Length: 172
Image (cartoon, helix red, strand yellow):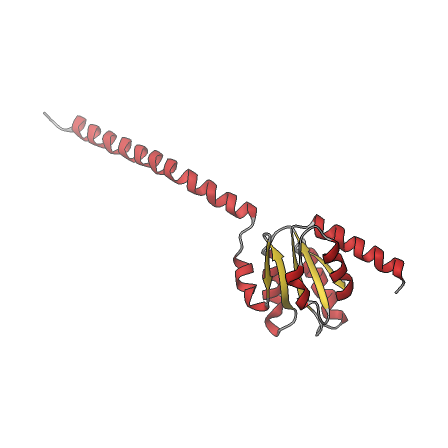
């Protein structure tokens, strides 16, 4: 590969590191062409950009980035695919679903401004909630007391109405 081509690839990787909030480094060394193509389709369907890249070029892109990615340097061995995404837990769920046979395997991840090195962090990464999920939970928590007050007022008005109706129907 020519030096100019390498520079272009490093620049593109740098742009993707800035564009996407989260990325996963995945070992895809045991996948053949058909399995890799199927994985790419699943990634596309889940809004994940999958890029298979040389480790040395990725290392140089990390060095050129504004963030210190040095905790990820030791895992840059073998065949590495990078899963770029804007929702932190989506790639983890895909890797867990597809990785039941051991391929693909998580090497490391950068999610929610934290480093997760090693496959043992896959369950923790699956449990990370997206921004929309957290907002939905907060809204539900805020609505809960108001709903309780409204339902209590509605049930008490029906109770009072029932008592008055019964008293009105009673012979004197």
